[in-house]
Image (cartoon, rainbow, N blue to C red):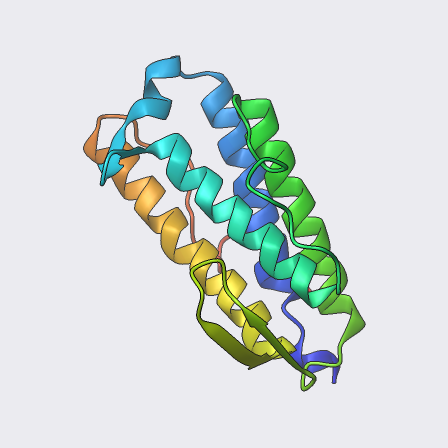
Length: 159
């Protein structure tokens, strides 16, 4: 059913990623070190977002799951390339449909997951968006507000 696809959300996430890539390219390197808690930085949070996108998309596509070494990035270019990889695979998974198929696996933390493809796509998107809200808030709190509206309704994303 075409009405169940996540095209608008995926397009919005892609546009937000592109805006952040441009925005970060004009900021001082120290912005990457903004603390987010538990000894982690803003760079670590963005890496977490994009790594989860990629790994969930790889599961949806039946691909081997990237190891930590395979997705380690040291710079902004690598970080946003990782984002692009995951988002492209999520879009491909969305386009294939078959949302009711059930996948099972054991997470990296050792607990079992059993979920439909729809639920996994939904998890990837909500996980991504919740953390992006954290990114925007942390940037504002540390004196680095972004210069665009982050709302889906005013975005260019269309199905």
